[in-house]
Image (cartoon, rainbow, N blue to C red; front, side, top):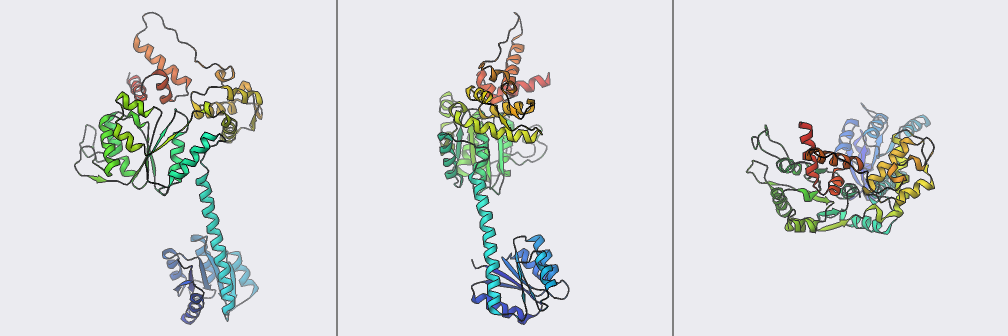
Length: 448
């Protein structure tokens, strides 16, 4: 596309003369006869450069300059004036003008000034694009030096600009949600929304309604029509966390969306279309879930177009020092603490721990140490007791004979949740149950 220049002058002859000069130089030109008309053009056809007469009836060129810079900060403005005083030039430059030209206008001067303004505008736009690309190229908190994580980041860069479904697998706390957010931000859909649904946190009927929406009267409590997450995420990305926890009924409806882009709301008959990219995640082995009968094979193959397996933290120990320092800086600022580093003994303890909760557990442990530390350097005593003493197993529980089984179950669940900082997915894996069971039990305890 030709670079666009807006010419503003109350005299038609001057506008025509400038257009002839600029068109011969390869620029596209639009006109405005006064300030208000110019502001309309700036909104409807944003140019790279504006040439404006300084003295015009109504809104002056200086007033137009101020208004245009407020709405189009990247616009380069050249002021035209027959009153080539130092005062007028200085005032225009103070308000952000690129340069000024005195009348009568000379072709060589106009061409030189416009060319310089265009070069500056192009440089500003190029730098902005580079900063944007850099922000997308460096995943937030995907901090690493280990080879496995570097390969994963490179793979994520390659798949981000595609439409393909992505399945992220890995233990709880390895950063699956973080990677999903980065893939979305690096994709062409980044200007639209990323919607996250935790499939383990909702029972079947609520999850179906949450995803696809429902019509009035679809079920008890459906007092109105509700849009689902597929409606809200249209044009963007839908992140389905713990996708293997979906019921068979919801899996069938999801499969249809992946195949045909179609669905109906709960209780509805109208077929709706959606344009959503699916990123799914699970901390379970999907192949084992298929064998167990909890995951449909055809849904798995639709989700598994691109598979990204995040390694546990214990398999990327060389990343721990970098991650720890990153979390120290973050939580020192958030908690107003003057903590700047970590002692060799404390770092050795971090590297020697097994990290069942992975990166999430490391962040929690680091934040605790930052808050408790009285020095600028985190010491071994600032770390959680289990880490500094290298005890891999939680304390045992004892029960008296005759303790109701319901109470035993509750204490086991609550104690395990306390050990993993409330991470229900990890607690469920350690207990050999589903995360949905924990959510259901907690709801029952609240009712009691």
